[in-house]
Structure formats: structure tokens, C-alpha cells
Image (tube, rainbow, N blue to C red; front, side):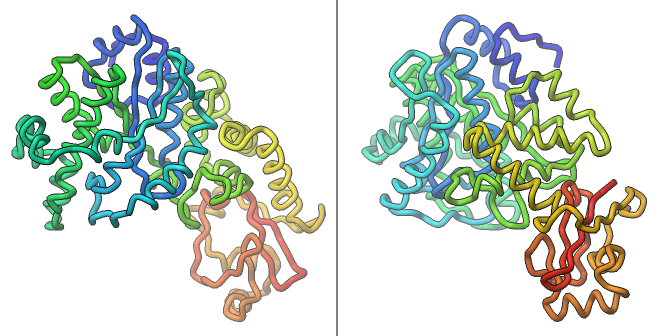
Length: 416
């Protein structure tokens, strides 16, 4: 794309890797250059906390405000009762009003860390679409809004097609979701002058529907923008870990575990994640991301500290780094812990945990290592090790791992 934006916000989006698609680059850029643009992202209240998968779009809202525009966080108190079918294999469990209100209260804590809420022209506002959805009259809604939707077109959207192609049923309730989301954009434009809806690339169809509806009913020029689906360099969806979701609420995932998640970023993702999840200058992100060997670990610590500071505060980040140094660099048991340093060639595509136990001197043979695991005598990072077939790859060795045989024999394994 050769388009060079005039507005600060579009520049940030393009330079830092936030932009996947936009319904009208030039029109949106002009609007952003002329004055304050109110823009929203919607969040269905399906859990008590947001998770790392939401963080990219929370950073988009933060940058929007930093560039002088007005973020709207729209809580889906109404749409959560229906459930977004986009790219899902099954129907979401339906929640009652009390559970939805409880979830919204939990999610609000996170937004307050990233955005400044208030009554000023650039202050963020939090809205709940139950405000206009709960009181809808079904027949009036069908007559006034439903007539603008083509079922043929709705069936052609990738999010719906993928579900139907797998021959998994799509309930009429879920099918209504995209009409309700489109109606949200219309109401936000009518009530708050909202000009832009943003979201992940899986929301493209829903966003386009809202723009079409608002143009037809209100004859308003509004815009849509999506962020790319974020995957790690090994192709996994961002935020999925072996331990489950990486929650943003500190009472669901400790700041230390959150810090450790970012410290374990693979080398190839470090520069990209610095641009998206921190506010360090782009040039500095590129410099840090280009470091190699043991130097890249310093960049990962900066990444972990910066991201943790934004969410949990500088003190929590400092404490997490100190804990990590104690546990991993000293193994939590003093300075003289035996350390096995593997070369890239030795590691290859992965090495078995049994080989690592032997190489680190905790067992004399593979047979002895397997027996140690079978008798529950082996631990990995102080957690019981039960799978003798476990393979360890470079991602897991992004930080040193601690192996233990019994209570008193330990070794660190690191990548040289």
C-alpha cells in the first residue's frame, strides 16, 4: 500500500502493524485530520476478564486517545444474550443479566488502566448496548431495520459460510447477531456522533453491515477499520498457552505470570510485539527486535517490563523481574546451580525431556530418567513432570528451564 496518511493516528496504525483493512483509507484519514473522531470497539461480556487476545485492540483505543480522538468502549450487555457466531464451531452458552453485569464489572478494571474516562471531548466513555437493545420492539425493529438486510448477502460472509460449510447448525438467534451489531453502529452514530468502528479482522463482515445500515437509514458517511489476526511466529493464535488463557485481571493471573508470558516470547516475535504492545518508538522496537543470541533476552525483558507496567504498574513489573531473576537465573536455590547450555544444533527441532535429564546429569541413562518420571521424582520448573514423551523446543527455552530430581538435585537448561 502506497498511501501516506496525513493524520497521526493512521500513521501510528500503519507503522506499528495495527492495520489490516479499512473501508475508506482516504476518507477516514481526512476525518481524523479535521477534528476529534469518536470511535468504538465492542466487547461481549462472556468472561470476568479480558485476555491477551483483546490487548491489541485495547492498544488501538489507547493510541486513538493519545492522538487526540475519543474512544468508546461498548460493552455488549445486550448482544452477549445472543452470542457472536463469527468463526465459532458451536453456539455460546447463554448468560443471564446478573452474570453479564458481573463480567462487565470485571472487564472495566482493565480499561481503566489504558484509557482516561471522563466528560471531556477526548475522554473515553463506556457504554452498554443493552441501553438500546433491551427495549426494542420486535415488529418495529423488523420493519425499520430488518428490511435493509439481504439474507443472501449475510449467508455469503465468511464467518457464516465457514460454519455452514462444516454443516454445524447456526441458530436463528445467532443469525440475528450481525443485525444487532450493525444496529449498534447506527445508534452510536445517532447518539454520540461515532464515525468509526474498529475490531479484529474476523469482524469485517459485521463492521461492513453496520456501515451499510447507517448510510441507508441516516445517510451518514462512517468508516470501518480492522486489525490483523495476530499469530506467533510458529503459527499459533496469540495468547494461547499450555496453562490456559492469559487473563488481564490480576486476580485471575498474577502480574508475575503475566510478565513471564511476555518474557517467553520467541526471538522472531520480539520486535513485532514491542511495536504492538508497548509505546517505545518504532526505531527502538526495530533495534531491539534485531538483536541476536543472548542479547535478545534483554529485549524480551524490556518487552515484559513495558507491557506489565501498562497493565499492572511499574512496581509490579519491577517485582516480577526480580522474582524471575531469583527463580530462573539462580534456580531459586542459590548461585551455583549446575547449568546445561545447549547449542542450536543440539536442540534442532526439539529435544526429549528424557535426554535433557541425562545430559544435565540428573540421571545416568534414559532408562533411569524414565523411571524417575514414572515414580513422580522429576519436576520441570518446580511442577511435577509426568510425560516422558515431552519434547522441548526453542520456544520453551526462551528462558532457562529448571529440572529437578527429588527435592535436592536441580539443574538449569538454557539455550546458548
